[in-house]
Length: 300
Image (tube, rainbow, N blue to C red):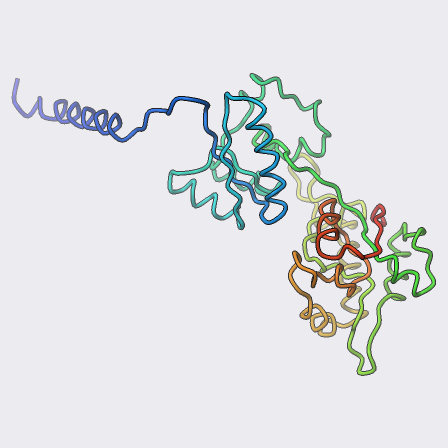
């Protein structure tokens, strides 16, 4: 046998040996005690404090698992960077729309086997919340802070125009009429109060079609974003800019403060009606506790 015939096998064995030794040296043995889980969560501020209370309660409830919580802003981007660098958290609290993005990028693992072992089943959840984590037939995420939305409205503003605040609008036509009555301009023609603005906050572009009975896809494989219902929805959105003026609305909106502040357009009583979620109660309580408001199903 010639020497060169031995070279590659021996070299391969040397490389494998070096890898094994380096792994043994660099890989840390798990410390004694409970399993430690790193959990990144998107909520910061007082919402982050609420999640920390949940984690602390879990850690106190047992001694098998200890969760280390880190609250992070812009979590959808920072988590991808952490995954790409090879140092991701064990669990991360993302937003629903991130599920498909992360699954397609192979940045998260399917949970099917884990759910089976833990006895976690779809029938234990409200279908709309369970379905958020299901993509291409696999379970990739479970809901941790599900929510619902509603029309939030300023009772004082409705009373000022003679509208009974216990009789909120039930149809889009009623919402439009009420928005017109609540919109005010100063002597120079500038908008100083808006009844309703589809782009305040500008979070719901993907959802307006559902209000009109539309769907973004047929549930199988066909995109239906251009269905008559969706087209009608965005014609409705466009109607506000045609009616009040694009520049006038842009100028008015430029005076709004951050969402998480007393200068929030709804909290500062600059916008009378908004589509918002269950979280809004906490922001009102914190930043505008004297605000007179109510919530009702969003008009259809």
